[in-house]
Amino acid sequence: MKQYDKHMHTTEHILNQTMVQMFGCNRSFSNHLERKKSKCDYHFDRALSTEEEEQITAKVNEMLQMNLPVTAEEMPREEAAKEFDLEKLPDAAGEVIRIVRVGEYDACPCIGDHVENTSEVESFRMVSSDFNEGVLRIRFKIKRA
Image 1 (cartoon, rainbow, N blue to C red):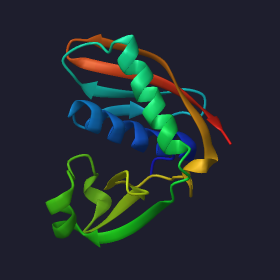
Image 2 (image 1 turned 120 degrees about the vertical axis):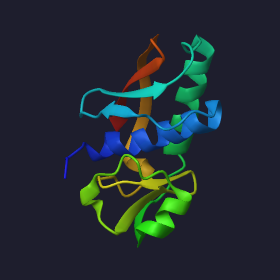
Image 3 (image 1 turned 60 degrees about the horizontal axis):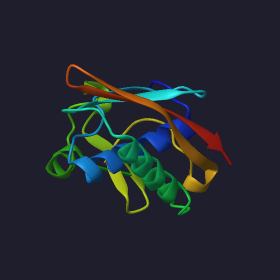
């Protein structure tokens, strides 16, 4: 199993759900999560405005500050496929799928490590975003509590 920084990984879940809710896009199709700085790539049709970057940042920080529990549950693959896109899961995920929930804000199949509560991440900061050939890249940093 690929090891991610659990603080960044949990923040990525919140960022993904924020993008889905604000823009109706899919979750990131590619990401690179490191302790110091991370990035998420989205299929998108344009660059973000400064106002949109600020709105995304505000929403992610709002969710982090809600002290949401981060939990995992297992469900049969067939049941999970009815509710979630399983395309990104490796074949080795098997017939029982792990669903990670960030409070009631986000839920998705995931095999990575996460914090136990969003209070473990103090804040999110978008470092930059850019758009190139149908891909919106968001780079971000976090401050740990």
